[in-house]
Image 1 (cartoon, helix red, strand yellow):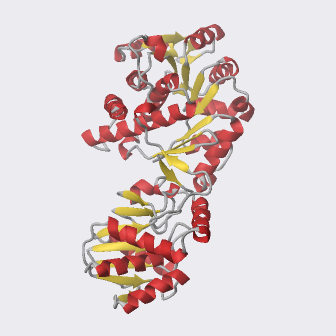
Image 2: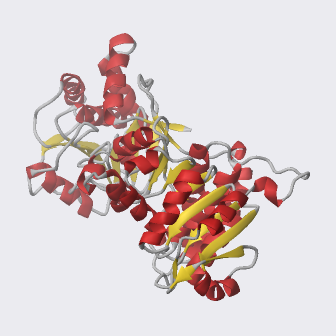
Image 3: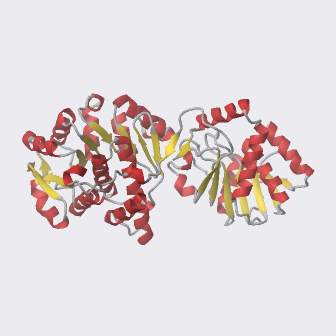
Length: 493
């Protein structure tokens, strides 16, 4: 799997490499040459440079393009340089590579390729003044755009920023950073590659999750449905109108490999769901007015039968939901996935309920839900999503899946980023489909962390495939379910 380094880890790793192995000016040369070797250039090329080492990479790119007979011009925000940057800029002058100082009126439309070397991964805050103006002009240009290391204006750890340079291709240097995947990344980066220039991480990296054939345990002929797990999906209420969405969740569990999927719903809505499911079974629960009423004997019997329970999808926010969840937390011995309304109930039960759970707990919040269970403001979560997710998982002894344009999965020790999914998945029921897939993988993959990452990958990749067959506007969650089997086939190959 590909490594992802936080900005601080990358900074320290870069400094260690310079101190022990490779001089800084040599690393800068490697970075610029790697970019020059990796892009299909369309001349003339305009290289927009700031004042730091990211600009130095741009000067090396210019030198390499000059060697190859590719016309290029350096566009400087100002004549200020880092020491290594000055070294390579002076070489550009010696080679008569043209340069000019940017102004508010600089014309970028004359170039067929634009290269963004304004800010590096250490950039924080927001682009201001001339830099902001140039980035806006850069974005409005119809030319092919390349960002070096990270898109200028983007926070390397969070993928956030108000004014961010868009790119057709981003060439990460050394290792990918979280910002290449999180939050706004997919909206500003069309394609990305990482260029290894010999920097080894000195601290534990995160990983871009990429499943292999071994991610899914081999199925034996000498087996039966119980071998691969009875799973229960507890949710639904009269106010939750999605009988088809509940059915999609059950079908997602079956497509993802559950031996048996039991849909546990209020008895009064069972008749509306039964016509929409084939292979899954219904487990009616006592209810009042279409919302569950906690019945210990029913929950005890259900829990005794299943390896995995997914709890909370559309179940409602009554006190009965909290009673049911509290019972499972204190008595269930399998893997318990808590999602949607279940997370709201969990926030009311408090941190101790999570820390003292008798089961292996997997939580699947989006940012608002994570704010509720962690007590952190959303702005604070967005400022350091991986750090907060990792700390919460470690402090509470659970596996956490933090939803977003890319998904973060962590057990407090190891961190996976799942860079799959698409805009078309922003539709009702997509979270239910993920819960169904996760209920299945958690029943047959030994590690809860690996099971959770696998489910997130299958869900996101199936969503992408579904969107390619429809469009991001018309796509529904059931389209994602229909693509699950093809994604699993790809993984098995």
